[in-house]
Image (cartoon, rainbow, N blue to C red; front, top):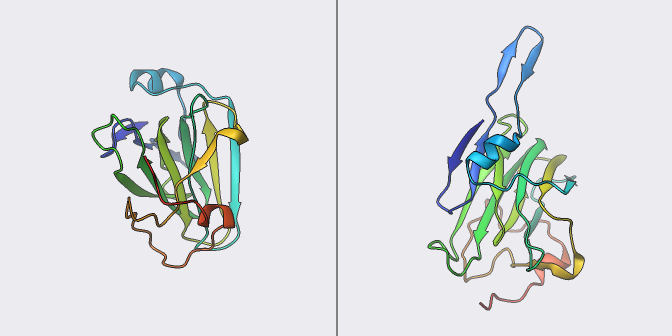
Length: 176
């Protein structure tokens, strides 16, 4: 696997090294030893799938409050997404900065998102599925979010009028 640092410390784009032969292909997409070597939390306590019927569906930007902050490994298993990570770590040199990348079933890339970084995505195709691995179980009382179009962050999305839940659309303006 290739671990590519992004502009946000601790956020990595991970590219499986795909090997092909006449039968098809193979790649490793998780290795505890390699995660440890890159300083990433290799613990997985929960895995989730998000299926999205329509192109233009936006989910996020989500995170869990302490003491239930979670590290996430996100992969697109069908379709394609514009995946966003937003740094909410007050002591980080990139506090309030964001980055985005395309995760697709074709490129098989993954995004590692550490504790303190919010996550969201916008589907670029119908019938898109995302597979998440998380370091801690979800705690509904710790669930938090940043509104997708909060002017504090000015995240640029490839869709002006996404399909979005009432909850995600209703988060208040950010207050540190």
